[in-house]
Amino acid sequence: MRYSLTLHDPEGRRLMGFDNAHGVPPQGGRYRKPSTEHDHWHRTGDDEGRPYPFRGADRLLADFFAEVRRILTGLGIEETVLRESDTTERKAP
Image 1 (tube, helix red, strand yellow):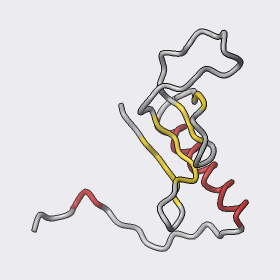
Image 2 (image 1 turned 45 degrees about the vertical axis):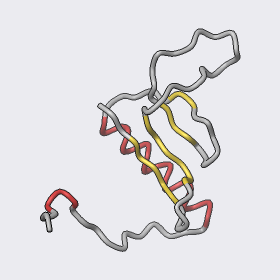
Image 3 (image 1 turned 30 degrees about the vertical axis):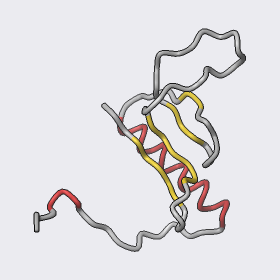
Image 4 (image 1 turned 180 degrees about the horizontal axis):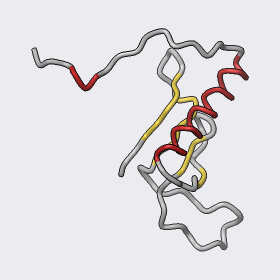
């Protein structure tokens, strides 16, 4: 399963994200054995990534939205859904 969940500002800059697109250095020092896992998260837009212990899609979504709330609260932005759309039912032109 591949995934990429990201939060962006209005200009399109990534603020935070969870994905498994590439490996990240292990936490704890340069002499630790590299991980073969690619699950990781970027706590900030310029964070290179830190390992994320993937424990299922439900937990991934819960962790992602907890981080979204943390960031929005830190920026003084209310958590309000402005619009919902279902992209699975788009019709071809």
